Image 1 (cartoon, rainbow, N blue to C red):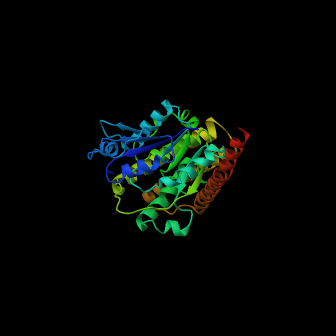
Image 2 (image 1 turned 90 degrees about the vertical axis):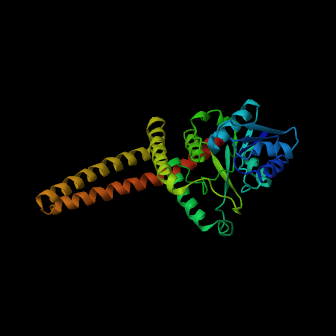
Image 3 (image 1 turned 60 degrees about the vertical axis):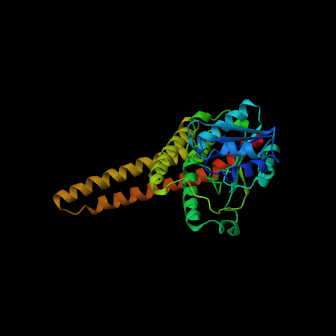
Length: 317
């Protein structure tokens, strides 16, 4: 199997060539994408590495980490790669783990592999506290929106994926920026791609994250809501109809009914200055509780049955 490594490069001039050079030991081709880096990272890589297995691609305009990765993926597909690895250029992802990341795909035990920084307390404790809390929160939201509850670190960008998967997920539709990893999971969920994880250390030194939390938080939440809604429509109504579909329908309609009743009587009480009847209060409470229970039933089905289905699908194939 031919294995290509894709390395998006931007503002990592001191480390990118070291990462690329290390990756050359484990893969058949290393593709570095200079994403219009102001420090000419691509030129530095070519200056320090003279190897036939190295390919540097230059973007005239910055496209973001997702856009750069997609450029590398498309190049790998054109050159007949069987497995494509994506590794960042900032040194946070150790290249010596590439054989371990790739092996389950070569053995037919997975279609997609990711790194996991939360496999142990010792590993997670090395992550800066703010990043740890942020990653845990984002991971939970990503699990809910993409349906990959079995992943402990879904937002991790250290990935290996079989090109058969890339050929069917419509690469051009993937997000070009920091939502790339989550968008990729969403696309894979529509085809029930089995994803597994390997343990990796949390390496943080003097790297500065390109994400501005206050600026991106609302954008991230909005995108996750959109992905969640689209996934539910596809997985539970267009492509399948199952007990989870029934639960979400009942939860939605009872929830909307309780909101309408509560809002109507709140406005009515504010205008007439009268207390809402006890029967209406009980009705609102009962509808809310039943709606919540059916939503919990849906979450249970989504988090327990879907992962099992993906495993059986791979075994069957």
